[in-house]
Amino acid sequence: MYLLKMIFSVIILGSSAALPTSQRYPTAQALQVDEQVFLIDCAEGAQMQLRRYKIKLRQIRAVFISHLHGDHVFGLPGLLSSLSLLDRTEPLDVFGPPYLEEWIAGYMKYFTPPVFPLQFHTLTADEPEIIYEDKRMTVACFPLKHRIPTWGYLFREKGKPLNIRKDMIDFYHIPIRDIRAIKAGADYRTEEGKLISNKQLTHPPVPPVLMPFVQIRFILTNCRRWSKALICCITKQLMETTENHGREKRSIQRLRMPPVLLLPPKPGN
Ligand SMILES: [Zn+2]
Image (cartoon, rainbow, N blue to C red; front, side, top):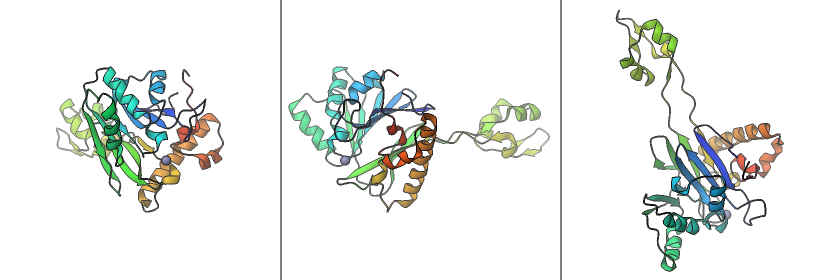
């Protein structure tokens, strides 16, 4: 079930609380960005859900763990083992709280270590911080309030160029060599020397996708600027989701993670 299908697709692999149920696995989400997959939490059953949703394990680029409670992380050793069995060679980046690396190192003492480079990134920041960046997006972590050290993650698509108006290209006979500069914000000077402002020539770009993974009740009050932005973003998504699926808006109160978690995954749909 794809709940946000733009450039980014979010697939909820597990949305249960601490105990798995016959209908829901514990917490795990897959964020697909083009051919790459980013896992956010990796509880028991995450691998099976990935299979059910036909997400190739080799596409996993990085794993982001929110905190070291088992219902968010017990699927990780099994996933690492499977990636080795599949002869993965690409590095895997794992972001998470202190002791995640030690916990996995303990597991490796008794089982075969991964055959691919495993790169841990231990979170320590007590302020929002960008921890990952590629050509399409950035990922920031931000601390949350829970019984143990916990972080949320904000995936943000990078800004897109302005959209140039085709009618303006024709009207001013703008050569192809100037189009890139105009899309980047430049004005245009005609052959007669007349300056045409960029605003006249372009439409604003589509707003970037902003995708938070956070348990609302864990949001820190000392992180107000981010909290407000996050809650607005999450609430907006919830409204859209509830409208689309006929759920009542009071469901906000029961929200644990992004609103999409209100809808239990139904493999095969
Ligand atoms: Zn917890």
